[in-house]
Length: 140
Length: 216
Length: 111
Length: 117
Image 1 (cartoon, rainbow over the protein chains, first blue to last red):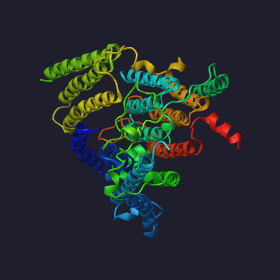
Image 2: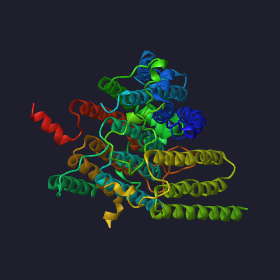
Image 3: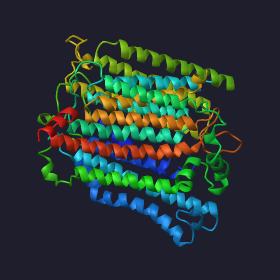
């Protein structure tokens, strides 16, 4: 029926680029617009594009929901863990100055880790939302 | 100054689209128009010098929320049931009174883009002055998001995580099926509606037409 | 040099704008669904490309030019694909490409 | 003339009221969710308009004394957008469950069925 040949070829070309762009947005967020929220959404959008064109079952094989449930929790854990870590090092909760010898370096590290946590959680939750909606049998 | 012209043009488009959403009964069209509404609001955010927000809105509004809405439509009805004729007086009254009160409330606000407005005088000014040396990264939005207001962001991340859990609790997750089982059921991920017909062929109630599903 | 670049940019922007207006008119005026896809697809490529090129001329040799080139490449890949997908979906959904039926009838069914 | 200095706020409120009207007057639950999201987007526009500074630029620090727009509304709205889509997903999931339980997503039909119990 609908084989979507053109769409599949073009999306095979574009999906890696979109993922790379998501990583750029994630890790270049300190210097240009971007950050964990945007990067997570873009990364999830790339995988959703794959799922739309190649079927949900193939996507479930690449990124099983069990894994995503763990990573969704892992992101929040990284975020909160950075906060706990600063407390253990003698500062306030999420006081990144304690993470390194001088203030800005600690802030850099803290922001990097926190944005990473946000990105992981947003990607996983967006994909889980899509799995939950698309996996439901239609027209019951 | 070209900025106000672009701004008003985009907002005018948004008003037209919002009115079309009110009138349209084809919910597929509503989902598409809603996506367009989000994209135009991303344009407005760009004009308002909020690049990060525009970025997020374009990715979320035009991408994820449209997909979710379309997926919902394949599981519910595609068309809204026709309403009874006549002017809905009560909703119009409520909306008109609320809108009038809010417009009355804006009359005390400072002029649009006023650099001396109270909102620019307190903590935001400090962020712009000091974040360069305190945080050391150029993007002030990122430093406020992750460092100055890290508590907020932790809360928001927890909310997103909770929303994910809630949806899974409501809908459940489909487990992966073994390969040989799949041959029988060749549905695409959105119920064969990945590339939906646009308009005109709208009489079906449930767009995921299982009888047409070939080998996917 | 500066003036030449400015004039070139203006010419490109005017070309792009003209194609934008023509495409917009086409979407309103053309009679059937498939001809309207043609108008929309033309807007996506012929309107956007000259404008992005003009912006590249204005940006000079910098990171911005590279980003604009990437955007241009992305546009040239995605917009024909989306037109193709739209046309294929319409064909699959039963819109008559030869418009042997009354052209006013099929698309205007929405309220 | 003050009226014209506030056009952005007023148009945002107008858009929000259109979304509100969809929310209160239409019976279809999916359309209600769309109206609610439109309301939300309009509130975002209202917030971002407040952070706008005439002649300002995007709040990414560069050398030289520039005017920047206010980063605080940007941060609030940035997170609110992503949270908004997550909560919208919860609403849509509820709609799907309602459809499965009542076999309709029209509000008055659901009310009718509930009264007949």
